[in-house]
Length: 318
Image (cartoon, rainbow, N blue to C red; front, side):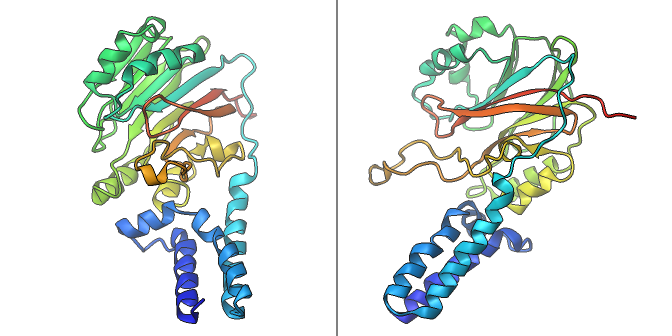
């Protein structure tokens, strides 16, 4: 191992590992680098082992330090957070989010795959007119008599399907469509917001503007925000959205290292790759009790879907 190459690799890993905390840094490359965490930082382990084998003690120590620091950063994502408890009289609500992928060639398979889940609410992103036709023709549509749909070409469309009545509210002005509804479940309503931010690798400025707008969204009552944020916890822009208002369901359950993208094999050489970053999230306000969250496959999509089970939280003691 050449000394210069070894130190260059260590410096690159150190830059990626520290990038989530250098908030003034910006741009497409920085955003992509942050999406590689924590896995890029943990490659300090094999780098250090290889350097030690070749007698590069300084590089070996640096690799081990980078990996150790990255592991320490992961601790908050693995520690379950016990939030508010469910109101004893409240009705549980299961909410699914599915990014359908606007080029999905298996749209006809989506309805039959989702129907057995029997969730209460489904939120869709990348909801195109072709997807709408396929889903309306499936048996899934029979179970969801209340629908708010904004189908659009490419990745801009969104929709909410519900077993319970819906009331629409003023939307949030993001580049893609956003839908805000109240789900009138028995006992108490739950507000549901479905979003889809722009891609940071294609429209980086619009992506920043979308997340800045979402960071201003507050919750006046039990609220769940679902969607493809095109950002992970390692992006400071997404952590700004969380702020003091929202809890990420996966992180709250101690599953902050779970990943949702990519699930498709975009090139024959990379058929082995697993998802490496979580872009799809369910965010909960303080008035929502989290009961469970699971991930699932969505036929033809490049994203994992998720189902979050929630209930209005028990009122705080005076």
